[in-house]
Image: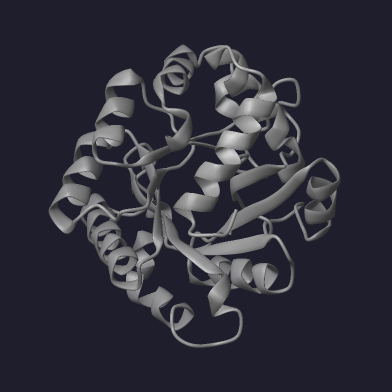
Length: 252
């Protein structure tokens, strides 16, 4: 059984029907990720209504201007709150700067604190902002269960993240022709710290590039990671399942 550690089920083109397709492909569990208060609420609604699906609530750096306080109503008591397993995705994105950088840093720090306060996993998005990302995590306190999602760094960044105790989650990028450094990172990442994801509906793996991604394709990502590590896909299937269950505090 495969575990998609990061997807966006409520997004356009990836409705609940994608859950059934994933399960038919052997993807028994998935975490659907919020990117602002509205999408986080939608993720929670999907998770509450489907077995094998859990939710993360978070404020993507693009939407940091909305303020981390907008997430607080989703973390209180209420229907389906037991399905919230993480804060995120949150972090820093200096490529697009859709929120001003000081605003991004403030929102990220606040969400790191929320993960610690609520004993939840933390799902980190970082792009062209490695030093500030590591700096904020260290300053606020790295949550015990932290994931660098859709890992795009090279071995240097991978080692820094692993040294903090974090996990690395690899997406379809690991199949891309120009992603040698990502593959090097996957090769060095210990199996018990390695997760696989689709980030669907984005980043469909080769040979599906150019089409919408879905959780059903996480076995393709896992097979690519296995090839990089010189392992059978079944080994990555089992290890990434166990790693995801551990980081999201779920029974195996």
